[in-house]
Image (tube, rainbow, N blue to C red; front, side, top):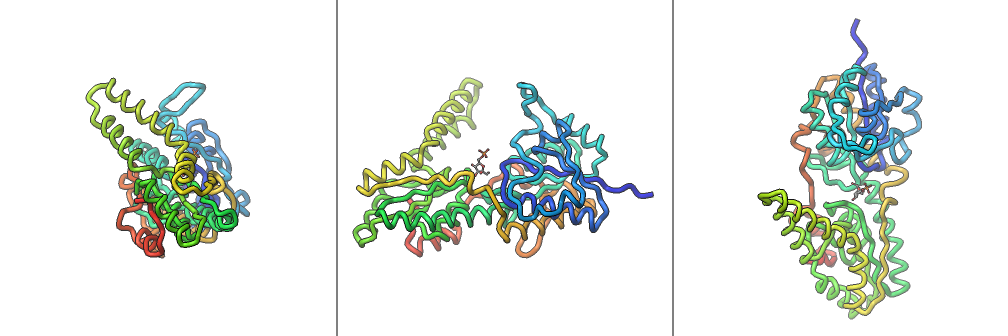
Length: 375
Ligand code: F6P
């Protein structure tokens, strides 16, 4: 008699709306179309290392489509460097043993950049892995979209809409800080959709004088308020040059001491950059003589009900994932391509970042509606 296929599933990295829709998509198709069994592991890769399981039967998968977060829990642990009882340990072997012990035929990892690097390590250990792209940052290569981006885009856009009326009433500059790590997709998308007057993204270091000039010009034309959408990773030209220098020093270091010095410099720069949006507000106040206020959108962008777009994407990718497992296609990420879905090698995804290219059409559209991009 043919043995029932068993698949494991984890959600890893930062949570994002649509993770439950993805778990449901994989699970319902695996159970319903292929008669597989599904085991959930809790809290990302840690669940595999510590054998924290959750039964994912029909009942567990019911009613989760619209719920934010992840019923499995998540975490940013790495298999090769996991803190166990206060000590960093390589848990890769333990994970491989648990995978074998539970007689898994495949492991589905739903995650972003870090998850893909971790998943690749497990592929190299011989585990049959298949991944789904998830992150509000939209920075995963080789896929048109990642689960969570559409919802976060809607939340950030609504926030900008709401900030508009208060900025207008008080004749203020309001700066909305938007997530996205080192990619500007969320800020650029929400900035355009919300009609921000200034959009600052990590890919385009800014000149504070140019931003102030654009705001002053609005005032001269009788509009004495402005909305600035700034990505958490955006920085001035001077700061970007300092980061680039320290990164090059780290890359080219020929001794441990040199590498350590570059790392310390990067840590100092990062610590200083964490207060960048507040500094930006002070600088713009001084240069424009308008009052400036800051709103950091933070984790609101990752929480709550997934949008229709994310539910649809998660269900498309999740159901295809079950089909690929049935067809024994492993070592791939299920990518979104147009209306369809395409498996791409995890090895071609891991370690790469999809940032906004300088010639991206969204940038052109932003400029054509008069948005200052700070350059
Ligand atoms: O990757 C998603 C994201 O929300 C980024 O936009 C942000 O920089 C990061 O996660 C925050 O990470 P954490 O939740 O670990 O603080």
